[in-house]
Image (tube, rainbow, N blue to C red):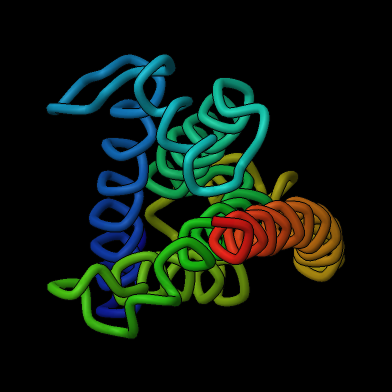
Length: 181
C-alpha cells in the first residue's frame, strides 16, 4: 500500500469541492434540483442574457457543468474535465462581467474561481487518489491538456462571441427605439 502525501489529499479536496459545486449547478439547470429552474426556466434565462437558442444553451451549459463536475470529483479524464469547467465558467462569467467582480453585486467572482480551479486541476493532474491514477492515466496524458484547452477555447470563443453580438445588436435596437419615440 502506498502512502498518500499532502498533495494528493489537497488535490482530492479541490476535486471533490469544486466538482461537487459544478455538478450541483449543472443539475439545477438540467433537472431543477437544488432550487434550480430546470431546462425550461434556465432556457428562458439563457435567452434573456443572449444565449440562443435558450433551451439548447441551458442543456449545453448544464451538461458541461454536471459532466465536468462529476469527472473532476472522480479524477477521471481530468484534462478534458478541467478544460470543460473552465469553458463553461467563461461563458457564465461573460454574463456577470457588467456587474463587476464581487458576487454580492452580481459579478463574475464565483464563475471565475470555479473556472480557474478547473483549469488548475487540468494542468496539475488529479493526484494519486483518482480514477485517472487507478486506470494508468489513459485519459490523462500530457498531450491531452493543450488539446482539451485548444478545443474548449475555440468553442467558448464562438459561443461567447455569438452571445456578445446578440447582446450588442439588442442594445442597438433598443437605442434606436428610444430615439424614435
